[in-house]
Amino acid sequence: METTPDIRLLLAILAPLIGAGLVMAARKRPNVREACSLLAATVMFGITASLIPDIRAGKQLAFTVFQLLPGLSVTLRADALSMIFAVSASFLWIVTIFYSAGYMRGLNEHAQTRFNTCFALALFGAIGCAFSDNLFTLYLFYEIVSITTYPLVAHHQDEEGYEGGRKYLVYLTTTAKGLILPAMVLIYVLTGSLDFAHNARSGILPPGLHHGIVTALYVCCILGFAKNGIMPLHHWLPGAMVAPTPVSALLHAVAVVKVGVFSTVRVMLYVFGVDTMSALNLGLPTAYFVSITILVASAVALSKDDLKARLAYSTVSQLSYIILGVALLTPAGIEGGLIHIANHAFSKITLFFCAGAIYVATHKKKISEMGGLGRAMPFTFGAFAIASLSMIGAPPVAGFVSKWYLLLGALDAGSIGILVVLLASTVLNAAYFAPVVYHAFFGKPPEADAHHHHREAHPAMVIPLSITAVISVLIGIYPDFFMRFVKAVLQ
Image (cartoon, rainbow, N blue to C red; front, side, top):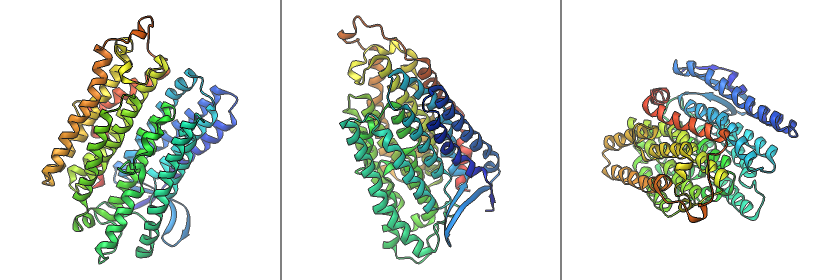
């Protein structure tokens, strides 16, 4: 496939980097500071959106920033897979800026300049991962995301925040350096290049390599990108819930976890390739391995009374749907996994936005204390109900499209076991989401709330969560926008 040089890729990743600098320069003027964040986000989304016609026309765009050695460079590339992640992340950054302004000001949070700066830098790393043309570039931006999000996790600067931040940093940097880095060196030695293949079937590893070597490299890559939340390397993710809710939304829907699963999927398809994985029988074992995460994380979510903790374990479970779908190695399965990158992003960010709005309006974190709140906060809990349906996989919300293709993929692969896992996980999803909605709308308010008249949070928070909830429905009813990119991946 012909690759066309295009400087817009460099401009797209520079937008949040420049935005971070402008935020620091405007630190004493809150309105200007947030305007700079919004400008950077809008520019990044505009540039990313401008790439859509070219990618839909079947082109691949690339831009080499610099070259270190033959076959080793920092190069950017836009293709169908990268657009799924880049469009979702760049758009949701705009929405999150409005939401975080309402949240941070509503609670009069400290260090808002640092918060907004690190937010922009995290998106710089995320969009860099989306547009990476090789494993070296991907690794570089992956580490940038890890480092720049540490101050966000430890934002409150208390014992709990520092502990969550340490766990976050240790898990993610240790696995990357201990597994991805040596695998990357060995792949370069074996192939002379770290460039991703131009299609998802062939991969880049030369034929004739010992099966044990290829399998070891594969395992290092699957476990090394620990942002994907696969058990047992998932503990950083619930621990990061000590961060402010906009950070949780960023972690669980936009930047961090999506960087993890996107990187995992990129390596599965464009380093190893469908043909190699099928020949070495790496697909179904991977699907069964991540099935453990899907089921166990869902069971743990059932036991959590803290709303953000329940959502965190839901994320651990839902991320593995993406890897499972790709690991099925069938067209429908891969399409179901890839479309879930976008579908999960819009639905999960809605859920975290709702959790933050509930906390700002009522200072409640526990589900057992939210009886009757749905009647006082109908927009917030209505959006929560819509996003919950998406996580469960009910029509007409976005998650239904993901589940439908995953089920078809399991049938095409002839795996009744995976089919049972998907159905069981759907029941578990309903078991931990439905009680939240039912308790909010039909439950009895706690006695302590007898003299409190709760109401919706500030419109700066309610409007963004309403927008993302509506989009979750729209991309469920009209999935073609993202599905065109998804289907192009296998062409």
